[in-house]
Length: 254
Image 1 (tube, rainbow, N blue to C red):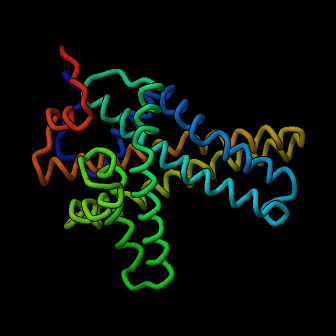
Image 2 (cartoon, rainbow, N blue to C red):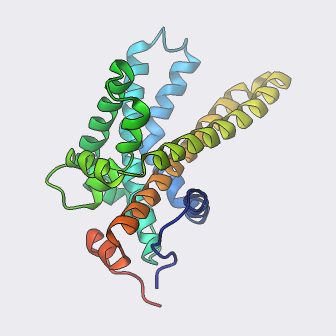
C-alpha cells in the first residue's frame, strides 16, 4: 500500500507534503544534492574566496552553467524519490541518481527550453514572464514521466496541464521563493554575526551557507513534482496504477 494517496491537494498541502518528504528522506535528498551540485558549489566558493566573479568571470559563468545542469539532475532524481514514496517503496540514492542520469537528455531539453523562453519573456515582455514561468512549471516532470516524443514536448504538455491553474503555479513560485529567501537570510544573519565575533569562522560560515542552499534545491523540485501529480489527478483521474506504469515499477504491497 502506498504511503501517500494521489488526490487533489490545496497549496498548503503541497508545501506541507514537500516538507514531510524532505524530512523523511533527508539522507537521499542531501546525497542527491551533493552529487549533482557539489562541483558547481565548490567552484562558486573558490571564486568567492579568490577575488569574486569579476576576477574569475569565466570560471564563475561555468559554475553557473554546471549549477543549472545540476539543478535539473536534482529535479529528475527528486521526481523518482517522490514517485517511489507515493508507491510505498523506500527511495534510495543509487536508484534516484540512475533515474536522473538515465533521463538526462529529456531533462536538459525541457529545462533549457523552459529557461530560454522565460528569459525571452523577461526581456521582450511579449507574454509576461509571470505567465510563461507558471505555464511551463511542470515541463521537466512531464518530459521525464510521460511517453512524449521528446523532451521539448514537455513544454506544450505543461502549458496544457496548467491551463486554468497558472495563478496557482505562480502562487507556489512566490511561496517557495519567499521560504527559501527567509531560510537563507536567517542563516546568513547568524553566520554573519558569528564571523564578526570570531573572524576565523568566516570560511566555515560560507561553507555552511552553501550546504544549506544545497538542501533547498530538492524542496523546490518536490513542490512542483507534487503540483504535477495534483494537476493530473484533477484533470485526468491520474492514479497509482498509472504512476506505476510510467515508472515501470510496482507499488509496495501491505
